[in-house]
Amino acid sequence: MAWSGDGTQLAGACANGHVLFAHVVERDVHYMNFTASVSERKIVTVKNVVDEATEYLELPERVIQLAMRYSHLVVTTPTQCYIYNTSNWNTPAIFDLKDGSVILLLLCEK
Image (cartoon, rainbow, N blue to C red; front, side):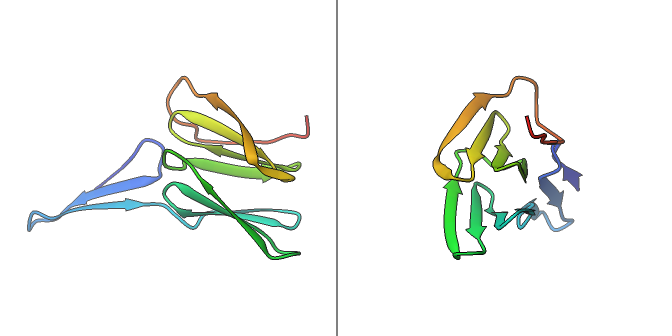
């Protein structure tokens, strides 16, 4: 068995020749009345628990990390970072990541 460098994928081989692949899903982050969850490899589901609204954020690559604080959701993939504002899920700020994968997201107010 071996984990990927970012800790989101697992590969294993069996003595009978079968190869298994697994992906980490169902990771949750919470902020105020929002809950964001990695529901599939490339999909983040955001729920507003007050009015029960649900948003599905589809990404072109698998999700590595996510964090939510200060009215923003930050999601990283192997090559890009997406910053969503909790008041508008349609237009994230996107920028490319240069060196490998992100292993920690720490958000601050400014």
